[in-house]
Length: 331
Ligand SMILES: C[S@@+](CC[C@H](N)C(=O)[O-])C[C@H]1O[C@@H](n2cnc3c(N)ncnc32)[C@H](O)[C@@H]1O
Ligand code: SF4
Image (cartoon, rainbow, N blue to C red; front, side, top):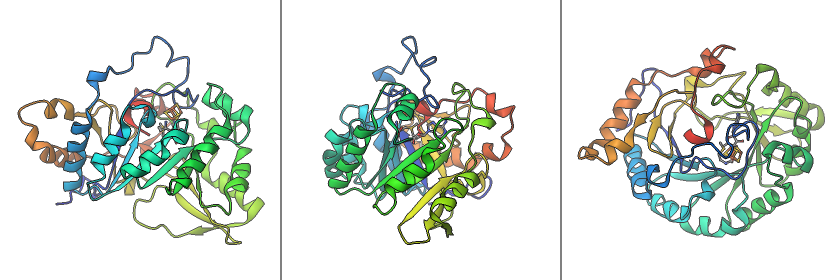
């Protein structure tokens, strides 16, 4: 039976972080100054096992979830990720994954064969110098493009996420659009968000969605498209000449808390009902106890109590709250 939260919002999506580790050090997500040699990542035994993740996902489906997204950290770093996908693919859900694509040339076919429906790749720039400065490990654009091609060759629809940061890659908005326009890849721009407490977020660094759309409109002429369903995160725009569409995710300047149907499971099994939450509900303790039969009831109870609407309440003060990191909770 579907469940509604305190504001009448249903639970539809579960994002599952399968690891808090990553091989990139994107400055807006895992800055090297914080996520360096001394950073304590989770131990293997602290991570939920694939069986545990599958049990939580199955219980979440019972209370209304119809979309699962595997994320992290970098989900393709989790050994045997294809096995998890195969286990989750038995559930009646849309199964997708977000990745930096570094391992995609090698893994795309296996992911597809295991039952992955779609994939989202992060790419913030087509200019090597800018991209390397953003991923901070010298990773070249060409290898991400190879990953995208491999996913397409394996038969998976691909979306590309680009985080736009003022003074860093805003000029890449048009370049990326030019590159992907007319292809099957749907490009989505994301406003730089104040997730976590380590990325030095300032409102001045945010390029508002309205400005992104203006840049696109000036260059290509775009018009809005109606949302496909309630709670769709990206506002959609299409090129007037029929060469496809883009999405813009304006979680800072046009918060969409009122329609938010997402929950998140951290790599160690804490259930969060908001990306900006400070605390999660410990499902791992429950899973590893004698009362684990009541997983579904627990998820239902957590969601029923939910009254989060952080993005609508955001101010300069709330941005420095000790929120959990995106690499931990799952982006
Ligand atoms: C945390 S990552 C995890 C999956 C994978 N490592 C990747 O980069 O695609 C998921 C998404 O969150 C986005 N992201 C990370 N930090 C962000 C921030 N501060 N603001 C907006 N988006 C962010 C990334 O660009 C990526 O598209
Ligand atoms: S955005 Fe993804 S690739 Fe970049 S540091 Fe965060 S988890 Fe890693």
